[in-house]
Image (cartoon, rainbow, N blue to C red; front, side):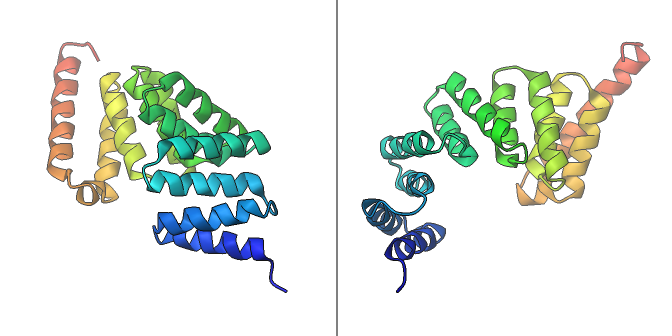
Length: 203
């Protein structure tokens, strides 16, 4: 006889993939009422569905419960970190990204998200490190190349910045994100700045 809980979980996952968030919430709720299976992961998945419905309060409650049941759920830390950042709680967001990475060093999304947070807070060296980790794990991560190039430019590491932005364009990032001309202009500006600084023996 088929496991009823698994049926509800499968239904919820399918609905989540199809962006039918209300159906996903309903299916995961039914699975939780049966109190069978991986309850921590079901709470995590339902949190994703609630976020799809723009219900941050319920999403946070589910991710908190997921982590209470399983404090080693790296993806739940990452998602909760995203929510904390959206709410302006940068300290908690950084802590959750770091917890996620402590549990799973291959979680590219967490490296990139923490890099963006560090960059926004002005921690450029830390941001560059995180973007580099994202690129190391996923060498076609276009936004990580662009972001690292931006951080390197701000740090006056012009050679690395130009190389990153050229790689971003080479891999199609300018076309995909519709900023090819802006990126090309940025590269030209960086080359001119580098040339001037070299003439002045400042670089």
